[in-house]
Amino acid sequence: MGCSSSSTHTVPLQADMSVTTVSTTPIEGQKPGTSGLRKKTKVFMEGNYLANYVQSVFNTLHELKVPVDKGTLVVSGDGRYWNSEAIQIIIKMAFANGVGRVWCGTKGLLSTPATSAVIRVRGSGCEPFGGFICSASHNPGGIDNDFGIKYNCENGGPAPEKMTDLMVEWTSKITEYKTCDKMPEIDLSAPARYDLGEGKFIEVFDSVEDHLAVLQKCFDFKQIKRLIAREDFSLVYDSMNGVQGPYALKMIEQELGAKKGSCTNAEPKEDFGGPSSPWHGHADPNLTYAVELVARMGLNKQGDKIDTDQKPPTFGAAADGDADRNMILGSQFFVSPSDSLAMIVANAKLIPQFKAELKGCARSMPTSGAVDRVAEKLGIQCFEVPTGWKFFGNLMDSGTKYFPDKPTYTPFICGEESFGTGADHVREKDGMWAVLAWLQILAAKTESEGKLVTPEDVAMAHWKEFGRNYYARYDYEDVDKKKAEAMMESMASKAGTLAGTKYRDMTLAKNDVFEYNDPVDGSVSKNQGIRFIFEDGSRIIFRLSGTGVAGATIRLYLEKYEPPDGNLVQHQFHVVKPLAEVALEISDLAKHTGCSEPTVIT
Image (tube, one colour):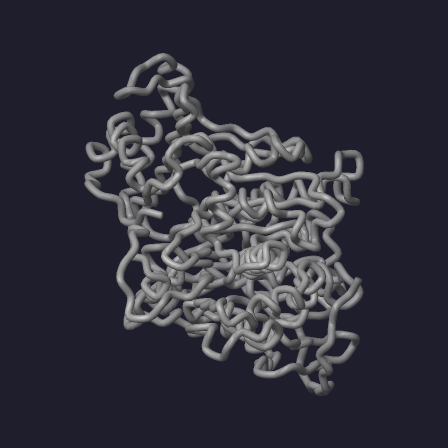
C-alpha cells in the first residue's frame, strides 16, 4: 500500500530535547471555520497565538486518546508568508508533546491534497496519526494578508466537528504550552532524515512523489500523454504562484510530456505573486481572479468571448494557493464547477479509477443539482451535504474500519460549486485530480471518436442528454458581520411561511434553513444556509462564508434548469440575472448591508 521513492541521507543531530513548559492565557477568536483557523498573518505572529492553538490541538488529541506518543505527524503548508517559521514552531511543540517522528515536505511545502495522500499512503500506509497544514487556501498571502492552520486526522481528512469543538473548548481554558525550545532549526531545503536520538527523527521528503504515485493509480497516464502529444491539442495550467507549481511541472510537463512553458506561474511565492501580479496575489481559480489564464483562453471575467492575438489553447486549468481547487476551461469556453462535477460523474467509466463502477456521489447543498440528474440515470446514490469537505469524508469512510456497520459508497466522486472536486483516493478536494480527470475524459473520447474532443464538445453532449442547470454565485465580500447576520436572521425567521408566494413569474415551493443529518456518524449540522426553492426547480441560496478572516462574505447562489430540448447555449450569468433580482428583493440585501453590487461573480 505504501508509497515512497526518495532516497534520503541520515543526519545525526545533537539536539537538546528537554521540554520547556510556558505559561499562557486563552486568546479569544480561535474557533476554526469550515477549513481551519484563519486570521491575518500578523495575528498568528503575535505572542502565543499559534502556540496556544497548536497546544489546544494536542490537548484534544491526548483527551481523545489519539496515539500521539511516539507517533508520526505530518507538518507542512502552502508556502505562504511565515510558513517556514510556523512549521519550526510546530515541530518543536510536537516533540514536546510526545511525538516520535515528524514528516515534512521539501521546503515545508505540501499541497492540501498531497498532505492527505502522504497521511494515507506514505511508508506502510496510514502511519501518521494526523497532520498540520499551514494554509489559508485561496486567501492572499503576505505579512499584511492571511495565514491559516488546520488539523487533518489519520484518514487524511479534516478533523470532524466533535474534534474541532473540543479544540475550541481547550483554547478557552489553556494555561500552558509545551515546546522543545532548545532544538535547532531544521533545514527543510532538501530530502534528509534528521536523527534526534532515542528513536526520534524528522524526515524531509520530496513533496510531489506520494501524490504522483496515488494519481498514477487513478489515471491512464499513457493515454493522457497521447492526447497531449497531438499536434492539434494544446494546454496551459496556471498555478498562480501557489504550491501547485512543483506538482504541475512534474506531472504535466515531465510525466505527461506537455511542452515546456505549459505550466505557468509555477514558482511558489510567499505572497502568491503579490500586488504586482495580474491577480494581485489572490490565488483563487475563478473568472475574476485568474485573469491571466482567462484572457489567454479567450474570455473576460464575465465569461464572454474576446478577441486574442493568438489562438487560445484547447484546454486550460488553474489552481489556488494550496492546490485543492481547480478551474476548467476550453478554448473560449468556461466549465462551471457544478457542471464539471456532473460531467466527470457522467463519464466516470472512462477513468480507470472507476472501472469497478461508481457507487456514489455527492455535492454541497449550494452546488447545482446537475449531478443529481446524472446520478438518477446511473442508478447511484447522490448526497446533498453542507459546505465543508469533512462531510464528504464521512461518506467515503462509510463501510470502512471507521464505520464498519454502514453501507459502502466507494468508489465515490464529490464536489462543491466553490471550484472543489475530488474522489475517494484522498480525503480532501484535489485540484490536480480534477484536471487529470478532464484530460482522461478528453483522451478517451478523442481516441474512441477518432477526432479531437474538446471541453466544449463534452459539455454540449452532456446538456443535450441531461439538460443544463444555469448557475452563478455572487459574492459580497468584507460586509459588516453584524449586518450580514441580521439579514440572514431576518430570512431565517420566515422559514416555512412563504410557500405559494409569487415573485415575478415564479411561485415559491418552499423556503427553509438547511439542516443535515449525517447518515454515517449521526451528527446533525444546523443553520447551513437559507434556501428558496421554486416550483420550476429554480433555487436561490444564501450563506455566510466560513473561510474569510475580515468581516463577512455573503454568498448568493442562483440556479435555473433548462431541459435537453430547451435553449442550452445562453450565457449563464444572463439567464440567472432575473433570479438575482428576486433574491435581492427577498433578502433586502442592499438595505441591510449597503452593498449595491457583488464583489465577485463566478
